Image 1 (cartoon, helix red, strand yellow):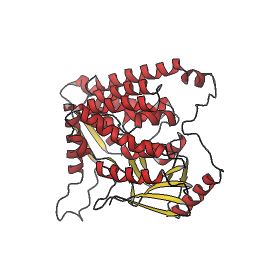
Image 2 (tube, one colour):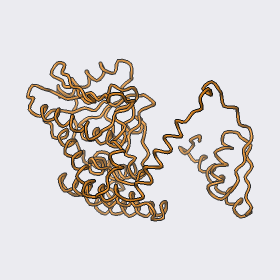
Image 3 (tube, helix red, strand yellow):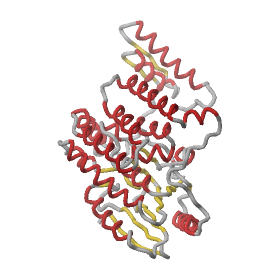
Image 4 (cartoon, one colour):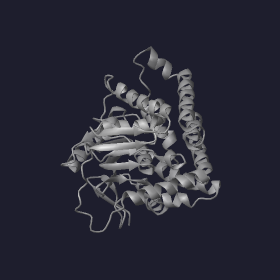
Amino acid sequence: MALTYREENQIGYVIFDHDDSKVNLLSSEVLKQLDKILDDLAHRTSLHAIVFKSAKKDVFIAGADIQEIQKIVDPKDGQEKAKAGQDVLNKIEDLKVPTIAVIDGVALGGGCELALACLYRVATFNEKVRIGLPEVQLGFIPGFGGTYRLPRIVGLMEGLKLILSARPIDSTRALRMKLFDKLFPQVNLDQFVKEYVKDIVDGKIKKYRYPKPKNKGPMDYVMNSSIGHRVIFRKSRESVLKETKGFYPAPMKAIDVVSQNFYLDRKRGLEIESRGFGELAVTAISKNLVHVFYLSEKYRKLSLEGAEQIKPQPINHAAVLGAGVMGGGIAQAFSNKDIFTRLKDINLDAVAKGFQAAGKIYSSKELPGKFDRM
């Protein structure tokens, strides 16, 4: 069993712990198990709150089962699979008691979307905590409600940034943008959670699922208006086209989906999301990106037998063959680690562009708040 359920002092605990695996995944089988548990919980009038947590070290839920997504060849099948996941997570959102996701590790893709369906999300100071929606990196869009819930929780601009960047964020940043409600130490986490849940049950802590944006000044008022939304969507499209040159459809589809479902009720909004997911999941681009993902995971973990005790030697000199913007960026990364780096190219203009690219990075680091060692 990938899921267990227990009760303590009228608090329900749904615990993810996938058998024979280092991570938890929201596979179709796990969703079926969760669906049954939620149907039972919907009729439990004695419960005061429900907590969703993981028994895995440094992992909440790593996402949906990518192998299942890779097997989708019909857009309608993809849409139906997305809708099945949406229906289960909707049951979490529709529970009559407060729901709390406790995150002490990675919460990516479907794991993030499950947390978004909960009313409260708490996490730890664990440096392994990462939350986000990396789907566009695999050629499709979030399909379990991420495009609908995330922009409503953290705001349209921040929500789009997280979806389009496909990069997860740590617990501190997630707290700042109101994606997390509270951070706790890992030590005595269960006790901290119990006290937090008690405060929720006692009415000491209250929140709206989708809070109205606060306008602290004229600029906020404009950006939170329909005019501001149009500017955000337009700038997002321009940025994506500049980065992808139109070769990757998933980010543009994500913008289109959010631009439509942001103004719709949940049923219609999620229908647009599931249809967009189905359309992208079957594309050759998505299949190839998933294949690249598996290859990178395979070779990232590759090791030579008997080489476990070998320590890497320090690098003092490096050479980058092929300059230009990319070569310059690589050379800058080396030099930033105090490694003497030679940049070479058969084209002197490319060498010049390389130096300009490296210089631009160094210049940006001198700006207040921009310094971040690579």
